Length: 251
Length: 311
Image (cartoon, rainbow over all chains, first blue to last red; front, side, top):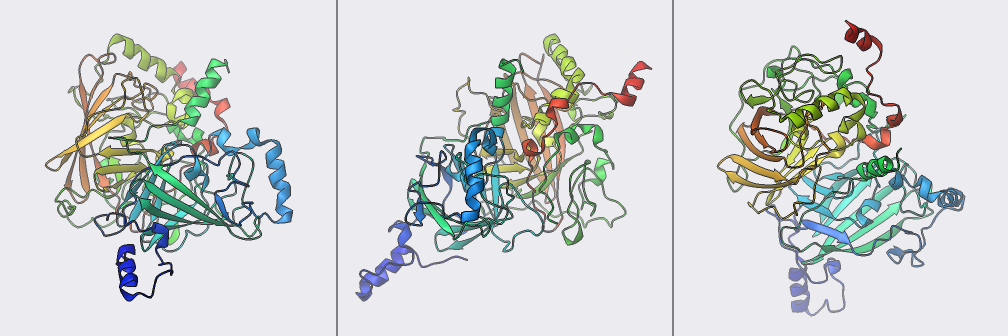
């Protein structure tokens, strides 16, 4: 649904009414910037985006966790044992080291760019990392029954100029980072993509998992656009690189 | 019980398990509601229907005549939707005209329209390379190792693809290997350095009337042209002409040149048919994740294929 109350219009009304000074308009997260429009009237988030400082080494304790305020992932006490086990053999057991799909939100937080494309019924996100892509279904409002995915099932809608992506149907096979932070197949992620300037995209993700986390927690990261002329994604082909390395070692 | 996602047992990709069913003239219409495709894949039954696999139509009423090509707001063809390759003479097994080759590769006309004999005009070096690839294809086919298929191979890979047309691009997303192509349509030049080689190459495109012309360079030499092992070098250059002819049909042509591998350019031509199944969605393809038995792949066909070879 197109929300025609842009940030600038709201601000103008507030200033005119002299009653909104100090009140945060609902679109404050766009910091007064109004993104250009796609042909169907939504905020244009398209382009090649990448996090500048990946938290992938260890998300737990990263300042990217904005809730809770201590930046720690709020594990249930009974779930901490698995995290410790994962950390003990993290290099061997990190699914990324087997060239498996990274899951969400991890794939958005790696040091590899991704490109957002928007059409009325689908938002496609193409990743340089292992040529993965996610399709965000803008016209479906329920997750698929009786199935699970490494990258989850993404359904989207617009909240003003913010693209909200609800990700469910996860399997329990991915990690959240290299350090062994993990989730169960009950994980549910709600992402919010908001363009905050010509070359900046705010990415937020609220993560909940009743089996592993005592409460939902939230990350917020700023992604930067690749502004080179004719910028394009390249390829990071994990399996091919692993096979070539094995050949060199005579395996 | 929750069904697993499509963890693809890569051994199943070995096309020996594929049944190439109905004549491709039937393929382009509404796919039958049958589960599965090649062995090992989970289909979706019930109200969501079956998968568009290799099967043709079975006892269904014909579709109404196709309407005209759909249009974007700027008048360019709107090719958005889900498509399956058809009428390509079993190109996924072998792109050139071919007899049955052992158990796993059935006979077919292939997809080559030039030269007229339907055969790849190899240099001697690359004819030898193709022969070597064929002899080891059961173990060495790149798709068994979950690599993307390059061009034109990706275009006739199974399970179809989705076309999206966001502003300035044509995007193609395949279920197979979750491969994708991002084709800018602004006639930009190639800017990837010649030394950078990519599985899917560097594609630049522009519209000529209703034809999307795509020029692809920077392909690596780690892909094959088909499952039989037909080969190319990293000097390959592919020019595609993609033309929708009605709302359900796209004509595809690709001219392939490669001064190291071929004595002259050659050309494939086939079609894509629109997947008419309501509510259809691409599924996740977890190739590496499901690839549990790579270390047991051998080139040996074993069993009755050995007996057949002895004859």
